[in-house]
Structures are given as structure tokens and as C-alpha cells.
Length: 148
Image 1 (cartoon, rainbow, N blue to C red):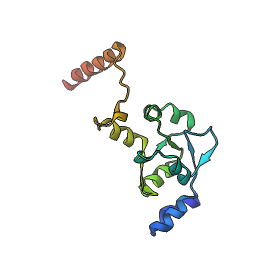
Image 2: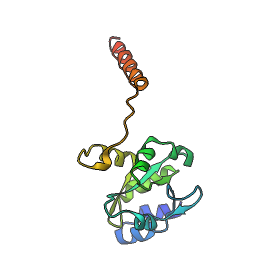
Image 3: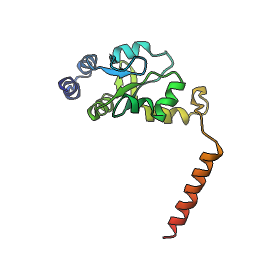
Image 4: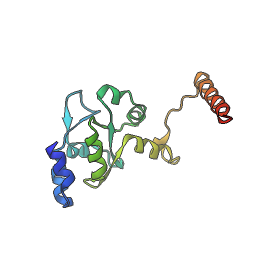
């Protein structure tokens, strides 16, 4: 917690980035319990990857079962798992590390899905009739409720 506080309170960006090198997070590339630094994550990033990606969750199981993680995993993205709200605050405050933007898994998934020219934006969409019926029923019910 003291390291995070030091990172957040540092106004000099060069010093802030140096302190960031002390931060550790679990990664989708490593087994549960192993952590990695932002520097190590950055060194493993493909040249064409725009973002350092993190996912806030209560625990690893919840993170690995996230639909955002599943979408990014299919595209080959490494995702940092953050388990405390101050980790989310830290990542949002940093914004950039070693020239790469730090973005939540939710933001990256949305950005990739809104760029139709990007081949990596082809996320799987469940079009089974069962899910269609659920959505159709929900829409009918919500339309019914609008009358009240």
C-alpha cells in the first residue's frame, strides 16, 4: 500500500515511472500466485499492441471467468489481474507506462470491437436461438413496463 501511495503522490513523471517498477500484479500468462511487474509485462507485449491491459476483479477465478478476459484471451492479450480497488485507482491515475497507455479490459474490448477495420475486432457473438429468445423476451417485458 505504501508503494501505491508513493506512486500516486509523486508529481515528477520520471520518478513516478521509476516507482511503478516496484508494483506487482498477477498476470494471465503466469499461474495463480505468481506476479509480474509493469516493466516485464511491457517487454512481453507484441509491437503492435497499443495498451497495457488490466482487469479489476475480486479474485483470480472471477477474473478468468470475465467475458472481457475471455475476449482478450482469444486475441492473445496478456491481462494483468488487479484485486483491490486501489489497484484500479493506481492504473487509472498512471494512464501511461513506458510509452504505452494503461487501459481496463473493458475499455480495450470496447475499443477493439468498435474498430471494424481491425481483424482483431472480430469478437465472437452468441447468436443461438436460446439467447435471442431471452433478449426478445426481455425487450418485450421492458416495453410492457414503459406503459406504467
